[in-house]
Amino acid sequence: MFTDRGVKIDATYQLNTGGNTDFLNMLDHHRLGSKKVSKTEAVQSTLNEPLPPDQIHIGPSDYVPWQQDNKVCFLRIEGRGFGGVPLNLELRLSVEDSPNSGGVAIDAIRCCKVARERGVGGPLRSISAYAMKHPPQQIPDEEARAQVEQFIAGVIAR
Image (tube, rainbow, N blue to C red; front, side):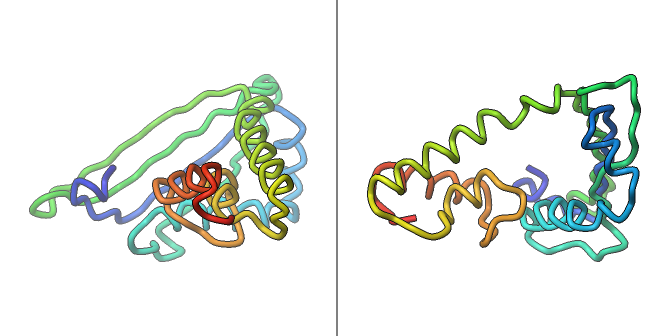
């Protein structure tokens, strides 16, 4: 939305807290590497110009046991609008973590079933780009969604 309105994004962070086993496991910082990379790449792929590494932080923050399966995401985007006027957005999202991606998983499974019925093998680029954080090929969400609809309609192969 910032990009559509001509805002130049300068920096962003996403900090997540939760109390489930996923967050507990991430207390071991050796387990964070791939998760941080995939989350950061997913965000960078939505930007016209990727941010320098020191201007973006995406990843889990901490384990908060009493949150249980509730994940809380704190998001901040800093940018400049018309005439270089500073613009900052802060957002807090709270969601029950485990079932949160259930619909996305079902959509991906349905696309796999369609591919199987059509004898299509290999990665399904459209649904992977639309549903996954770290797909084989990053595609902007609007384009990926259109490609998923075209795949379902039989217009494109994958």
